[in-house]
Length: 319
Image (tube, rainbow, N blue to C red):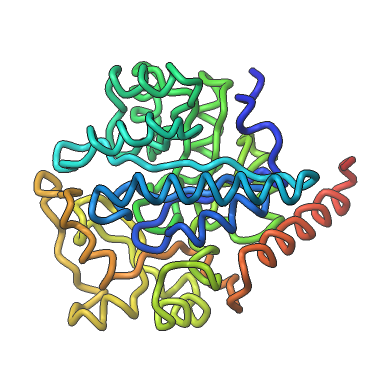
């Protein structure tokens, strides 16, 4: 199956994953200017009215940049929508995205309702859905999403527990549409590996935390650079959904990372006031051990590109 046109002309087969708090307008603009998909969670724009402002300003900035650099590839914007009953902003945020005709919507937690899909499809947008299991993938495709984001073991923030080899392989048995793979992807070699096992795109998150444009504290950036995979803890305590977090931030919150209680999944909340956990507890994937500096996004994309091309050459693949 041919990829949707909005995903066909990227500088690198990368979709930047939307990260709570960390993904702000500066990070998204830099990602898009570097030719990859830039994204942010709708809930990062607070209060809700700010979402319209963010999209207005981002679209204007990227249009001006494209006019000034007609030969450069500018990636599309994607906005993440949490499809859960506790998200009291979902209807409002979807309406704002439809108003701006955001080309890519990333839905999470539950398959998007028909009304949401119809509204996005009406202007030619596409919906990609986060999944951590085959059952979730099948339900999302039944609902009518256009593509899947496979969140495998090792991904930052909310993450699954399946090997990427198993997850991609099983999904490709019944779906030939757009697939992005997430889970410890921090190098150009890993981007190529994602494609080699059957994904179309790498879904990269934690690597952007340690960039100058990310909306995080210097302490968070430093923790990313100083950590390794052994410093990442997998737990559902903070949101009710399993995810990966930096041990250092858990200790700073007065908790024992080796003896965390299990959360009640039925009480998970993603409403307007849910940002505090993500501000105090730092999400990060197992690929943090591969991050040793804090470059700009443009420098990082150039580095990933060179690594990707070198990996292709090393394997004797044509450009």
